[in-house]
Image 1 (cartoon, rainbow, N blue to C red):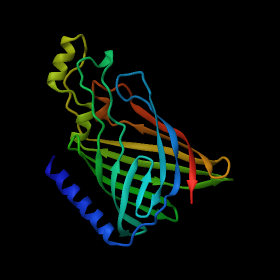
Image 2 (image 1 turned 90 degrees about the vertical axis):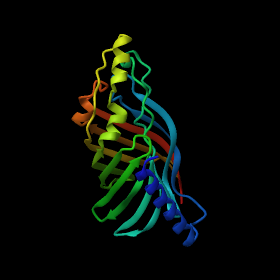
Image 3 (image 1 turned 180 degrees about the vertical axis):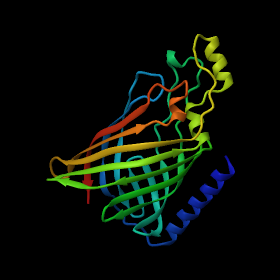
Length: 254
């Protein structure tokens, strides 16, 4: 584990201790809980779109919260929100077991942890998270703005943001070592060595919550990423952009 990882984990442990010393959180969950089908188009040389069924959680339990792929705790008030400690559930890793990636090792899922904030303003919400990936040793910075529109009983959330990934983070997912390139060529593949740089990725999206019956709702989200040249130039890359989305059924707890 790197020095940065140890410092960050120590800070998060201290934050958890401070939370325990304050008033006890409510003994119930408030928010939406259910299941969703998540779909991610491939960014590597593969025609497959990854589809998985996972829990859908968006809500709070006292100072602890879940926002789909982000789990965390509110440490202290900050501006119009809180300083938060977070863990991101990433699906960026992949299995390289296909003929287009001969000689390439599978990439483990990143495990970003860090600090950030959700600022709820009169013009919408702003999410800012700075994270350190425990697997690659790289860093990530996500900035997202989300507005809220109401179309009758349907709530719609347009989104726009930027995702920064450091060189080590991108290299873990899209870099090709000299040993992998040699193995690829020896086994009939065509991969060449590649050292990736840092990447900044623009993202747009839209989410919607559609009431069904009583506390039940349909949850929808679609996000589109324009991949940075540090990714597109990799011999592993098979696309210039990526679509990510889900459709789920949730039950609202009040």
